[in-house]
Image (cartoon, rainbow, N blue to C red; front, side, top):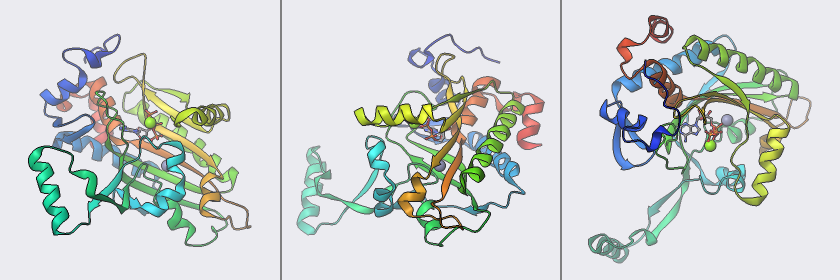
Length: 311
Ligand code: ATP
Ligand code: ZN
Ligand code: MG
């Protein structure tokens, strides 16, 4: 098993990212945080995804899969731009005529900016797997007595280029989302905190559960972040991957209170605004944590870990 370097291995000559490239587990595209994945890498991602399915089997979650883009009006209403304008990714498309086309090609030819004529389309990139869900749930009317539970998985986009392999611009998030009363959603979060912790231990990963906050943008964001932390709204399951000093959040547990319920007018059966919570599994991050701790040769991983994943 390789040793965790004491600090900041990312800037070293053979960083974890370099070694993942050397090994062919991740494939360079020329953009930091945007990588191809090998079949081997994917086999781990899929195994982790299956464990998440097994852990939730029996809860009666409704499975939904959205593509990695969502409606722009829904995105605008979700409030994402208030908190994270710097992370959002929008899809722009060419909507011009022949003359505009000629201008575009001339720019490419000259190596100048060709994107001026691109117009915002009706689609934005999904920032977290649960964002496309809320309007869909809201459109169904008030929640049933027991609330609702969903199972999601999506590629997500965040504009946060990095040399840490764990901070990708496009990555997959597996989520369970609970909607209902505060008691219902808090019990859900508690249950998944236990399940997630047990899963990571069984995978032989050293973990710490820590209170966390989202990186809300700007000065107003600092207050939101402090508030989120003080109220214990977000917890993360952290594993040292890039360094011991700055462990990586591999699973997150978020209590949104009535944030999405109010925005989307999702009601409980008794007419009160619904509360929501979600648990997010970072599929690439868990895979990278396994590679970091059990080595880059997946065949040589401990039997107990391989059994958990593929047994
Ligand atoms: P971090 O604090 O490291 O930025 P986060 O708080 O932004 O993480 P969430 O928004 O809670 O993460 O997303 C849910 C899960 O998705 C995280 O627990 C993590 O495993 C994964 N994740 C988040 N951002 C990335 C990323 N840039 N690349 C890969 N996985 C990510
Ligand atoms: Zn979520
Ligand atoms: Mg983040």
